[in-house]
Image 1 (spheres, rainbow, N blue to C red):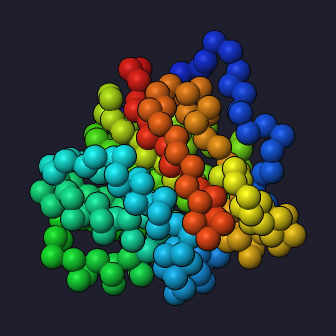
Image 2 (image 1 turned 60 degrees about the horizontal axis):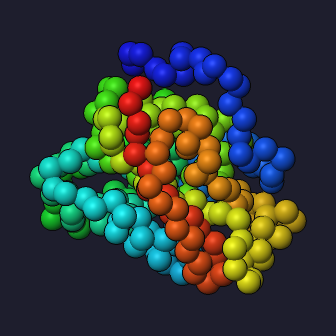
Image 3 (image 1 turned 135 degrees about the vertical axis):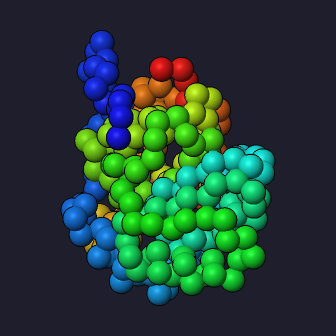
Length: 237
């Protein structure tokens, strides 16, 4: 895979801004099976809780046709479908660890007139792409499933595949900032499977520690569900 920036040791140990906050409770080896089982109804959930945040992600990304775009944790392809419409002459790649979610995405995208894309099984921890090849990397509702002590490895991979100045667009379930949104964290504490293993995280400070420049972070709430949308750019190595 070539040189990985995880081999570059920082002068001081990195301390996650998420330390001592609510950590992931579903083991990573169980995530793909969990989302295989959720694939058949996930779009309904996403329509009522995630659509506004994904609208904001598309707005902030300012996609121009002809780019190389990677969607990590592409899910059922709702956001990816919108990316394709804006990048018909570019390279569009979606990866996910869930076969069930990818099957749903492939069925949905088969109706898309632009067939200039690929959808494959793939992990955020080990992206099968060369260094400095991606213009925009989207990642939606994945870090809220990842243990804090594993997040840095993923951000390093994002840094590696992005071109200098490339854009990173993150959408996560986040901590409640408005009335009522704390309901979902209370559910997670009692029964994390009911939340699909997702809990609220805040990633802007962690991105800064890993040499990204955060351009903006916006809070979006839909059906009381709290999301953060972050636009960041890769700094020089």
